[in-house]
Amino acid sequence: MAMVGSRGARIRSNVFAYANLAPYIFFVLFPFYFMVVTSFKSNAELYNLKSIPFWIQSGVVTEHYALLFQKTEFATWMKNSLLVAVVATTASVVISILAGYSLGRLRFRGASAFGTAIFITYLVPPTLLFLPLSQVVVWLGLADSIAALMLIYPTFLVPFCTWLLMGYFRTIPREVEECALVDGATRMQTLSKIVLPMAVPGIICAVLFSFTLCWNEFTYALTFISQSGHKTAVVGVTSDLIRGDIYFWGSLMAGALLASIPIVIVYVLFLDYYVSGLTAGAVKG
Amino acid sequence: MPHRPVSSAVWVDIEVFRESRYEGGEVMIHPLPDLELRLVILFSTVFTFADFNIVQVLTRGGPINTTHLFATLAYQVGLQGGNLGQGAAISLFIFPLLALVVFFQLRYVRQE
Image 1 (cartoon, rainbow over the protein chains, first blue to last red):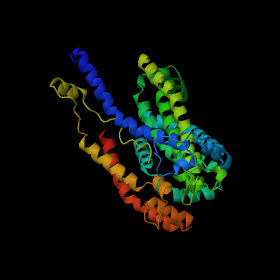
Image 2: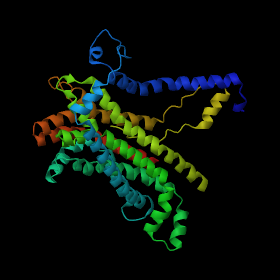
Image 3: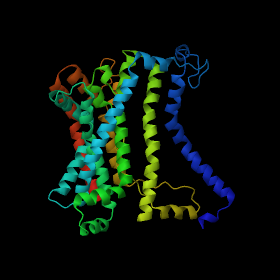
Image 4: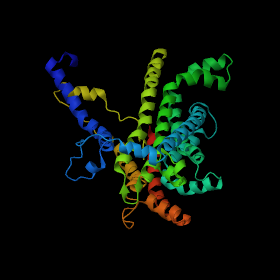
């Protein structure tokens, strides 16, 4: 009945939908637009109060990017970020798959208490933890190295991923696993051959979120690391391009822009898998 | 505090929505369930209290310590000032609020 609406009504409802979205899109994309514009502007124009900040009037310059790559260790920061994010995400997702499966499926004493405990750790913010953890890092002899971050990031990734995957494993029908178990598969075989292929969308989701969290992490990366060559991109850009009261705005924006690209790539790459994983599950189900 | 979803979905009953459309309503915004709304408010309040990144990047607590939050003050006193115990005490001031959040969140999760 709702579909019988006239063409005019349909257009009107479309216009309405897009009009609703427009402020949101504007709000979300504006920072990126401003980063692009600022990073390509000459300093003379940036500091000229009479110029209009929203577009480039006096020509595009790439000096901010040059400064970023020649005068700072931006390439190293990006490499560090990538290394930390990949290692921490991989470790966390592997641990979380095992933990999430046990908590979601196996019946053992204290399973629900464990679930609750994980949920609570997930709610404790890094703000409360960075002081004690910085001491732990020093004790372990990892102070001022990216290994410290690889070790510490799983402390917030594992609870998050476990919680997410626990829910996902519960949606997989128990009967499928029971078939495998009856046919003589061990628990681990059931997990790796039956459950994991069905849980691909959930795992991709965990990987995506973990990677983003690692990449954007600021508190630990700032407090554990002081040597410039060991910083991650997010911290390096904000700490080395703000010197006292001097802000290198152009290079800051250039760095922020370049540092946000890997996240975009990862999302584009994995969202395809994510969607195809979802539809594959639908056909099987 | 990035990506800490309180709940994955706020359920709006699609039938209720359709019904209002049939009756000539243009759009109906379903009120958030009361509990959920309170939870979101509590949650975002506490994580604003516990924020570190924005303050650290923009002002570092300055000028003359006028823009500190717990975390940035704890960082300044505990790590930069080397007074670890006092820094830990400052950051623990978030704890009572956090305990409240954990309590309500747990109750909410149990309800689901």
